[in-house]
Length: 303
Length: 169
Ligand SMILES: C[S@@+](CC[C@H](N)C(=O)[O-])C[C@H]1O[C@@H](n2cnc3c(N)ncnc32)[C@H](O)[C@@H]1O
Image 1 (cartoon, rainbow over the protein chains, first blue to last red):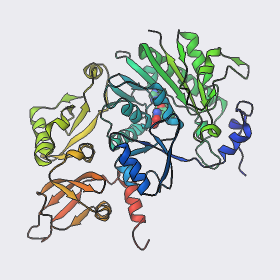
Image 2 (image 1 turned 60 degrees about the vertical axis):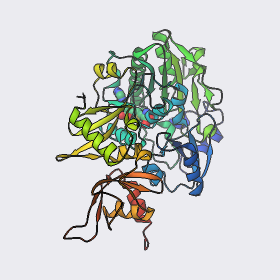
Image 3 (image 1 turned 180 degrees about the vertical axis):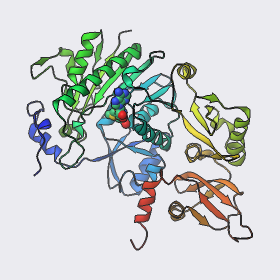
Image 4 (image 1 turned 45 degrees about the horizontal axis):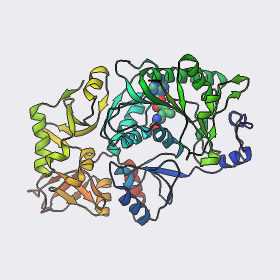
């Protein structure tokens, strides 16, 4: 049986149930798709799944997400090419749901490519309001643009700035900082998606994450909100980054919706201590959600 | 850089979507139309759109509505899908199998009485799929010719699954 890499086994005491966690990592990831309201009504979409023999169910806490069985390959269907849905893991739909931008608001998705969350933000905004999708990487922007065109998202402007240097001339009501991370949360045994990197890499990634979060907090309007998210278990990339931002400015950590199944953020790890408020952030584990490992912090800038 | 579409460009948009496809003007009313010379882009209006456009540099905005093809403008698959439910004319109904053939082969033969020569909205059992070009029969061909305008790259997943499903595979 292939092993769990050391980067993950170091969380033995962090996961509330290591055996269940490890068992979840040995199962293949289920297929989740998000219904896209810009192309098809929910009724027609559900009817179509059913008539194609696809079994589906809705998951708690993400109203437009369908867990499906029997879809030939989510990127190989008419529905995909017509933009009726987007393949998106359950936990990766949570940041937009938590941020919940109102129609007509101004929203920045700071690290947006390949755009699953951008399209979801646009749907939550009912296609109304300024939605800027930014990414540093040109080829990933090409993929982002292709996804947005397929999904018919009508209100997205794409920019290509280094997030840390994002201009401050225009401010936003909400910023999603779905930052680059070590991606440990996407690891499944045999899944082949996880690269092992050293501690130096982890430190460099964490520095970028803090710079991105601080910029997000700078360009959000007073009273506005920032959602910080990663797909990693590493406390260095999660609680430590949020705690560093809290130590630099006055901020309020907002509680996450009650219907989400996660573990509260932690307040100490390997000799580091963070304020109690960090328990308002949330860690999502595969043995709770059968999805990617994820972390979310919902932050309000005082108005 | 983004500039608002000029009157000639706006006229082209109207000629294609309203006149050729019968889409009511109100279906496209909410779009702000920008031009990058070779593409007209549509972006849904928003309260602070002008301020955002003035303050930041954008790579692309909204969805492509028309693309320049030589001296002419051509409708995009992206826009035809979005306004698909309003298309009244020059709509070419194809079966699932015909759609798969045109995706794989790039074209389909057969005279069609119900469309005018030029760009058409290819339609299947799930509504408008995208853009095609229909040519009437001529001296060389006694059948009409329908040429796919769907991007092979964008539809690659569908093309490979259609090829997989071909009999004999
Ligand atoms: C976790 S992924 C984003 C996934 C995306 N939010 C989605 O839902 O499809 C992180 C993205 O950040 C981008 N990125 C990395 N460093 C960046 C930086 N300094 N500024 C802006 N974007 C950056 C990467 O190119 C990558 O596309």
